[in-house]
Length: 453
Ligand code: PMP
Image (cartoon, rainbow, N blue to C red; front, side, top):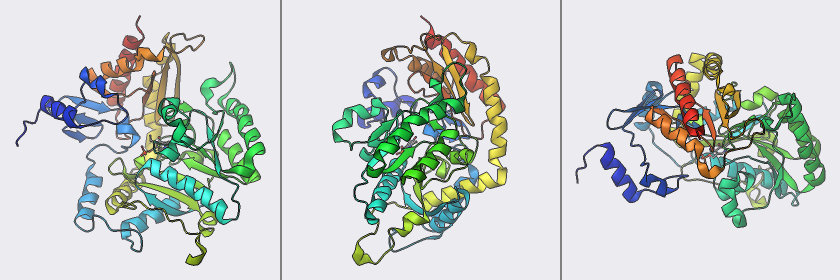
């Protein structure tokens, strides 16, 4: 059956058969999904030729623009050579080369790459590896994880259990393993006159107390370094990670760095851990890993962890975890092309100028009577809307103010996707000055509109 290629037709067909992620589908009665025909650079285009600036990198995955010519070329070549092969008992060049390069560019203690195919799965791998490591060491009492308030690590049950955003977690609580939750180092909570570093240091006390009390039963602490992205882009100081690394060593507990969202340059350095000068025991990467092209993830581990699984088969210490698409060659090839761009274009240096431009374009936002804070870490900039600025009282969530800003920006041709009442920018690194201004203008008007009455 031939279908006419129009916005209207695709919307209707979509609503007949699809169930969209993270969506109350009834909302689509009034605001149908936006049908995208093609993408180029920071732009997405619908069937009427209307364009949308992708200010959130399509859920934080895209780094170098949609339909990037370099990544396209690499993929076409890979596709005509080898699309996929089982990674148990077999291997292939993209998987090996990518692992070699990841080991080289990630913090120094990480020497081994275990592939999976999405962020949540990489977190599951890290949790299981940590628990299993202690078990292989004869420490069977270590079965729990410490996690930060307001953290997010994915939607599968293990990842959800170590996350702490009530909106996603609460419903499923009876299904989830029990975790130890400690205060977030979130600097939105700082006292008047307190620096970010002093605030994060003060909030470390709860972590230290919990480690002192529970280290004997704890496998690992899991954190999102520097920015709690899904937790409303709350940010904290690198000093927290330094203190945490020291304490994890002192108490014999692993440190898992979930850099799924913050990795690959988002915070201003290639990996956020670099800003604290620390090396975690396990590190999870996904999203930007393939430049936003294909689902791929990796959990990196230290040699010490790897060696605890390395033994004669009969001793049953192996890590028997697998996903069908583990280490998919197309995903690995897209990742290699992405790393080539980082190298060729000195992206981290170039991004410093872009981050300054984002700060400049939003310099006046802080003066708005309903903006409590404008915060930024590298290429992530967030604006927190509140009802009362002095007391930082939020708007009632039922009013969905952020959604009003979203709808306004969409009309203006900018894709923002506020987290509650927090509007943020996490654009592809190919954004230019004019596009930054357009993005900021749409957000400013959206804030004006959303906070009226
Ligand atoms: N960890 C973090 C920090 C994330 O932001 C996300 C996704 N937003 C995940 C894990 C889960 O990744 P995925 O959606 O690919 O399962």
